[in-house]
Each structure stands twice: as structure tokens, then as C-alpha cells.
Image (cartoon, rainbow, N blue to C red; front, side, top):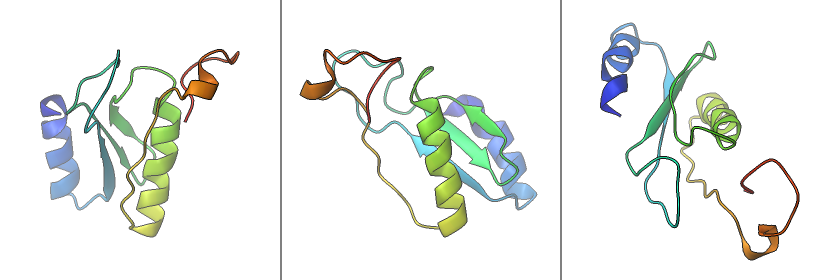
Length: 93
């Protein structure tokens, strides 16, 4: 999160609306720790990373939805028991 502060301050000072996604908890082997963050502005620019992988696109889409509605969202990502042996490119949602 700290690595984003200068850019976020710039968005804040220019009154650029943005959504901020933050990892609040993890279990097992997570690619990024709690506190990892990604911000998305109304122009579609993204800063930071919450997973470094397959979850980024879903978080980006959620950020766009939050910007459009103004409603906060709490999402959960990861593997469920049904996903463990499924073929596919990465974590389920």
C-alpha cells in the first residue's frame, strides 16, 4: 500500500475518483499479504497489485463496478473443495 501513496495523493488532489482494493486476510499460500492494494481510477488506470496473477482482472472489474455505483464491496477469492481438481488457469472465485 505504501508504494501507492504518492500516486493516490495525486489522484486525491486532482479530485480523480478511484476505487481502492485491499487484501484484508489470507489463508494457505497467498501471493500477496494482507495490506497489498490495487487502485483503479475512472479512466481505467490501475496501480498496485492484490494477487500478482489471476485475481487481478476480477478485482479490476469489481473496482469499475464500485466506481459506477459508489457501493463498497467485500469479495472473497480462492479455491473451494470443488475447485481443487478442476482444470483451468487459476484460482476460482
